[in-house]
Length: 196
DNA sequence: CGCCTTTGACCGGCGC
DNA sequence: GCGCCGGTCAAAGGCG
Image 1 (cartoon, rainbow, N blue to C red):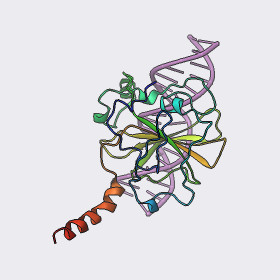
Image 2 (image 1 turned 90 degrees about the vertical axis):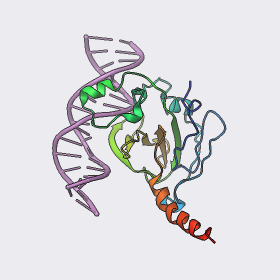
Image 3 (image 1 turned 90 degrees about the horizontal axis):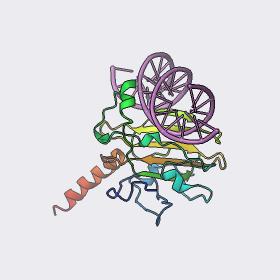
Image 4 (image 1 turned 60 degrees about the horizontal axis):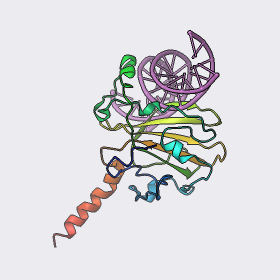
């Protein structure tokens, strides 16, 4: 089962996580793109749980408690997903599920008291659903950038209530706002200093 | 006023 | 065909 990662360029996402824990290959590490102070310490701690079916999670199949396949309708997107506008009506919603395309999906878990970790991007919550075999609901977020179609799901583990599983779907096509905010004055200062 | 969350309704896929 | 389930929409309301 292909999670789409192999056929795509080096992903920028998720920028937030201190480390991405790939279940398939060697752990895919990436540097935090936001200052550590803007994350959610002191409880933030990324780790792998042995009882997570990561392969299923990343390939859009059932996640935690059962092996039963799960439909990943979020992967049923039009091919030019990046160009879709967001003002769809119900008819358009039907039309947007024409074709299955594989999108890069990344999942990681954090030990945190907060469900939402600040990854530097702006997200709009568009849904929340109670899921089977979990006492906690799953929340659905979409990147608020108008040209960006990245989504993420956030769910707290019922087995270990201190752990939050975050699944990113897609790749941001714009820079991280908070990162730019942080780096811009730094870059300006560097430019100033290098003039001498 | 703009942006966000909440929440019930709706949709499509799957299993029986 | 029907029911279940996960995912999405969009109206309504809250907040700064």
